[in-house]
Length: 236
Image 1: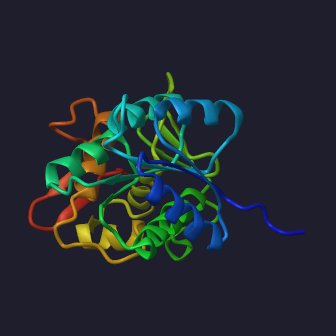
Image 2: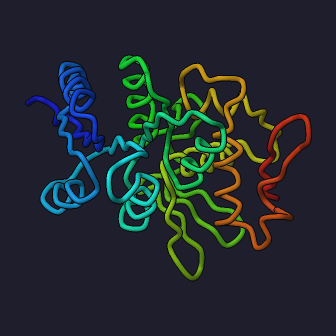
């Protein structure tokens, strides 16, 4: 029996790019569909489930950032942003919205393929060499992270996590009380070469702090070690 193909939905208003990516990613073994805007996206998702959305920022009508925020509120779905705007601020805003990765146009389709594989792989597991397969429920303070369902909860509620947030939190919880540099975290979480100016780890740390810290400006768990990286103070 053949394994089920992973389904990817592309949202971009450029017909030529939609056609190119659909053809290329289909040849790489994915089930690919493409739509031109947020309205078509909503219609598609009302009828079909997907494993990932590749989302252009500059769309007619509702823009990509608004769509991404809406998707994050509705479901835990991996998102890769595409944008012709390559400024650092735009990338940070996209990652703050909850996107799992950000790629600037124009790009090589092979680069997008590498990022798709990396994000989908992270949805299934973090690098197995660093994980204990028996650790299916990780805890700290009043929080519990279910590794199998990717759900974080405390005594009062479930706390939604993006794929990137789950991956990073799991790395921290399996390496407690140890300083991890940004380069180390990028290598463990992304799985492919990144620019030395990559800010995705810092952005994801900021998002995690807002979810697990009483005062994100004075973190108890996820601490910054200036000039070295981050340390997760799990306690005894």
